[in-house]
Image (cartoon, rainbow, N blue to C red; front, top):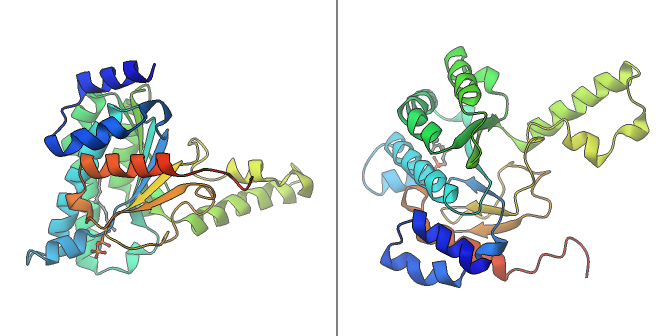
Length: 260
Ligand code: FPP
């Protein structure tokens, strides 16, 4: 079975010489189903080349594109990217505007291709605060690709783990006040069902690039038992081989979920 899965991947994926060893070391039968990415280091990557931060974000979009394409050829079912946090509004107006422009232009640029590749496009977070244009374009892209099943890609847009928990608690509070539920019906499951990630399984693997070792308010609830992997590579330089290294490291971990 494992051999069959590997052969199927090899039919679809072009391996570079640096990918080969780590690719063959992975047990593709137990690949994570959901990989979440904290894409960090775009600014530093650009600065190192004497370029503006926005140049790094544009390069970062190419990495998103490559990761979706590669993961779509692996037994990965869901990929989620932390694209814009509720705290990112604190950045300069120029950078925020450039990022908003990039979300729209990238979606337009890649939509046809993503659709053909079988990618189901989605988001988590409060997209309504990002401007009518973005909401409209993402809603249309979601509708257009809703039957795609090769891979499910979600962008975290105007998202933070705490803000998402607050809106879930508020929604439950309203139901409680209206007598639709009792306090005992507030459970882990009901909280989960009110998060914007309710349609996603918890990520087994969370990858953060660029050497920072923190969650930065990303999927706080969902990552309770996720394996965390930190890569020193800046996001625009993150390639297949780095993804494979992360998957291999994940497979070497012992996941105990609080048990022995
Ligand atoms: C973090 O790097 C990156 C972001 C906050 C933005 C990431 C967004 C993209 C790559 C665009 C994705 C868009 C689509 C449509 C897929 P940073 O700016 O914090 O880098 P630094 O830590 O080096 O300053």
